Image 1 (cartoon, chains in turn green, blue):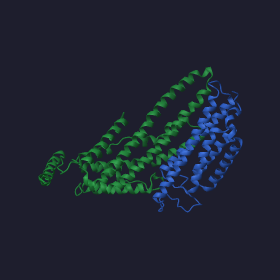
Image 2 (cartoon, each protein chain N blue to C red):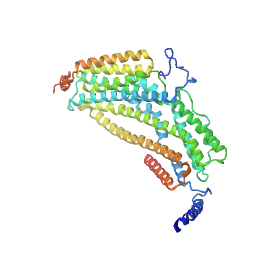
Image 3 (tube, each protein chain N blue to C red):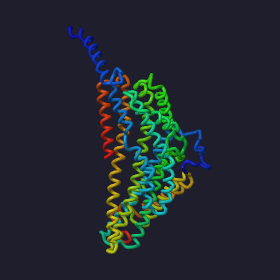
Image 4 (tube, each protein chain N blue to C red):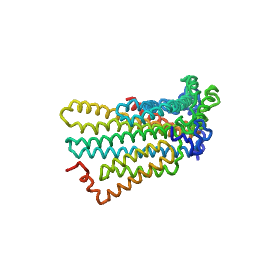
Length: 288
Length: 185
């Protein structure tokens, strides 16, 4: 009985304490701490792998060219032109995602970025044609996100809360992340064929050179094979790490979308800081 | 971007700025199918490689006769070429070029899956070389995006698979290795 009457009062106290403590934890003066949201957004903005692997995909021909037969080389050269034609757009998706995450981080905490130059950068937009490398809905997502960011940034971040931005941005963010995941998977498969082309020639030719006078050549070939095999083994891991990172960002953002009214709740904070930690760990693994 | 350029036969407009993009679901399933076909071509290339390597290994590190070397090199060149065709399709999937193949693409995928399985167990090396040639023809035809060459290539591949089935009855699979031209182990 007594206890029950005390509960509302106790709740009030906790709330007051929470507000006070929250005020301390968030230096921007917002009433609740969105520290973990900021951490997550920061880590998402600095996600590694995709940019580097996009470049690697673009430069496939450069690496494989010496190993190709004339017939394969003809097709490879066309493939090279195809990949180069769409590279900028592949990078463009990432740019808009990074800017979104930086803006989200800004909304969730103290100002640390000047985003005006990045916004100019986005102004060019993606080429919505057959060569552009993106599906129509990815283009729509990109356009939607750019519009959202322009509004948020131009309004001086006012009248915008983290929750509103997450709600308005989620479907576009998810679509762009999905595009990045698909592209990374295609990069990996292309790399697999490159690897097998480069290493395959040694598989076949080294046993053919069993005669004694080829010893020096065979030795050099084996040394080259080893260094190439090591290079590809290291690269293979990076596709995996990059994919893991992209999925984590997608999951984390989706959880925020599902918990808009409770972004600073204990569970959500724990969850987000977990995602943030994972992303930092993945990034560290990629920079090793 | 040949899969996209439909000069004559299909109603889809060919201009890059065409105002009629495919619906998202359409585009997605096509991109997935293009990727799947590329996966199958890669798998065929893997089968060719496995086949070449097992032929080479039969010589136990000894010298491989010149005629056989030439055959293995030709097969390896075909493997590399198939990989380029696969990479081309990956690039097209990435660019989400929409082809008008639809259902026939599923059949294609099945056909190449059969071919990959056959390459490992063919009895006669000449059958294998022809099969790989048919596969390359199909890969090149798929890149054009035009129905007629693709159907011709599909027929040629089907025919060769039948020939192999004839030369290679299930019961005879065990003797496959011993009946190869240059092997005498």
